[in-house]
Amino acid sequence: MINKTLILLLAILYFNFNKASAQNDVVNDDEKSSFNLNKPEREQWLKNTGAGLFIHFSVDAQLGVVISHSLVGASDDYVDRFFNDLPKTFNPDKFDPYQIAVLAKLAGMKYIVFTTKHHSGFCMWDTKTTDFNITKTPYKKDLLKEFVNATRAVGLDVGLYFSPEDFYFLHANHIPISRTNVKMDAALEKKYADYNRRQCEELMKNYGKIDVFFIDGEPKEVVKETCWKIQPDLLITRGAIKTPEQTLPGTPITQPWLSPITIGTAWQYQPTNERYKTGTQLIDLLVEARSKGGSLLLNVGPKPNGELPEEQEGRLREMAAWYFINHECIDSVKSWVINKENNILFTAKGKTVYAIVTEAAGWKEGERKTFTLHSVKAGKNTIVNVLGQNSKIMEYKPDADVSCTYKQTAAGLEISVVKTQRIYDDHRWPNAVVIKLENVLPAIAEAVTVQTDDAKATAAGVLFSGRLYNFKNKDVKRARFAYRAYRGRVETLYADQWKYTNWINIGADGRFSIPVKALKGDIEYKAVAEQSNLEVEGDNKLLN
Image (cartoon, rainbow, N blue to C red; front, top):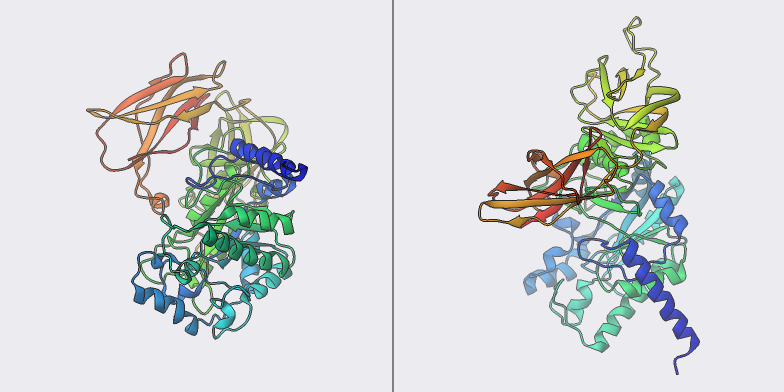
C-alpha cells in the first residue's frame, strides 16, 4: 500500500510540474523544468531587479581557454595534466571580491552569481567531497567564503552557480568525458546523485543565507530538491525559470526571466582572440532586457591571479556612470504597452514612462531634439524631464534655452529636449539618453499579439509566415518580416542589421505570408505588424 506521505509528495510534484510546464516552458534551449518551488515574492524580486553580475572563474583560467569544455574530446595526456598539474599553479591571490562587489553595485547590479563548480568539477570552496578544490592549490583558502562575506558586506545578494555535470567525477569513475553520451548503471547514477547532493548540502549549510542559485547541467533534480529543502527561500533561476543564454527574447515576457550574457564572447578569462562589446552595447542590452520585463546577468571572468581584466573593469565603469544618472528607468520598472518605437525603448512605473533614446552617439551636447511618440499621450499635469539634468543650466552657455517641452498632436506626443549634462571631458556621450514622462497615458490599450510561424523552403527561396492574435477592433492592416544571417548563438549580438520585406495585407483570420528569393546560410527572422503607427514584433526564429 502506498502511504499518505508518498501520495502527497507525488501530488505536489505533479502540481509543480504542470505549473512549471505552463509558465516556464523553455528554461534554456531544450532544457525543461520539472518543478518550480520558487516563492512568488522571490520571483517578483527578480522582476524588479535590473541586473546581476556573473563571475566565471576556475582553475583553467590559467590557460585562457573556454571554461571546462576543452576536456570534452581531449587526449588522455591533456586530461591528466588538467586534473593533476593545473591545481598546483592556481593562486588567485589578487582576487578582491569586496572591490568587485562595490563596482557591481555602482553599475546597478543587485546580486552576484559566482561559479562554485563548473563542468570540470573543480570546486572553489573547501569541500570534503573531493581534493580537486581551491584549498589544495597554492591559494589554500576557501575563496567562496571570501566572496560570500564581501558581497554581503557591500549589501548585495549572494548567488551561486553550480554544475551537477562533473567531468572530474566521470574521469575518476572511468567514464569518457562527454556532455551528450554519458552512460552509467543504476549504482553509479546513485553515486553521482549522492556526490552532488553532498556538495549542495555544503553550499547550503556552510555559507549562511544564499539568495540566488543557477544550475547548469544534469542531474538537476537532486540539486533542486536538496537546495530548496535546506533553504526554502532560495530563488533558483536556471532549472526553474527562463534563462535564454547569450541572447535576449524577441518579445516581452510576463513571467520572470534573466539572460546571462558575456562582456565579450567568452565566459572565462580569454586574453587572446576575444572581442569585447562596447559599453554602449552593454547598456543597450540592459535597457532592452528591462523593456521586455527581464533582467540582465552580465558576466565577467577574472584573470588567473583574481584581478578583473582592464577591459572588463572599464565596461563596468561606463555602465556605472550611465546607471548613476539613469537608475530609476531600470529598477522596479515594468514593460510599457509596447517595448520600443524605432530606436526608443520604454520602461514604466505607474503613470511614469521612461523613453530611452538609444543610438544617441551623434546627439551633440547642447543640441535640441524633437521626438514624436505614438504609444504615449499626455495626461493631466504631464511633466517632461531628462534624467540626470535639471534642464535649466548648461555649462558655459548661461543664455541657452535648455528647457523640456511637450505638445499633444494628432500624430502623437511631441517632446522636445536638449542634452546638456557634461559626462566626458571631450563633451561626447555616446550612450542612451533617458526622457522621463510623468503623468502620461497609453495611446493604445493593448498591443496586438504577433506570432512568427515556421518558415518553409520553396523552389524559389523561402516562404515567411506569421499570424496575429487579439487583433480584432485594433488598427492593424498590414505586416512584414525582418530577417538577417544567423552566425551562431555567440555571434547573435554581433549580427548584421535587419533587412525587411515589403508590407503585405493581413487575412481575416490574422494570417499573412510572403515569399523571399533564395537566402544563403542560416537565417534569423521575425514577423512584424503595424498597429496605430507602431511596429509590434513577434519572437525570433531560425531557419537552417
